[in-house]
Length: 109
Length: 120
Image (cartoon, rainbow over all chains, first blue to last red; front, side):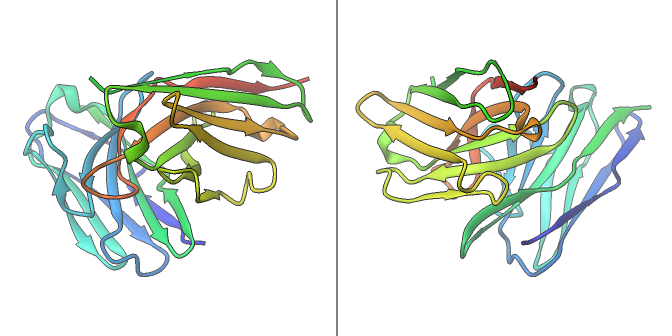
């Protein structure tokens, strides 16, 4: 099974700061990597799919990059409404399975 | 407007069974693969199962294989999860989620979740 690690597990930043989260897979997953935002008491929301594609309607301050085993998620200018936990998700088709990273909790300093 | 509404979560004893439902609306249900994802209280997300658009293919996480069965009724726009031999570690909020049109395994719509508590 493919294991996912995320770092940091939590961070605190100021409004307007650039925030970067990394996700690492235990083996090559090409670009089969998505990013979600989950606010307390809410269902997750898809932000980035296939490593770098911005989901329709998601603000352009969110971006993703990477391929293979190392991936990065960036908020270019942190806003108060971005307070949430962010999860990466890898997927595979042989056999079909998916694993989420442990999450990164983002707070405002 | 796309809506996914889960139901069926209750408190059940270890070893018991439960059937979750997810009612879908606002999109052509039988065009999409559907998934169940769960989240234990205060924990992260865990993919549970998927079913292809026609129900012909189903897959499960190792943690539920042989105990859970996913199914769908396209005539009723509904997704189901039959859960047998429940364990305390199955306690979680269970979400149904829809595959995105842009990319498989990208879940673009989620329900609000239904809580399953396995406890004696």
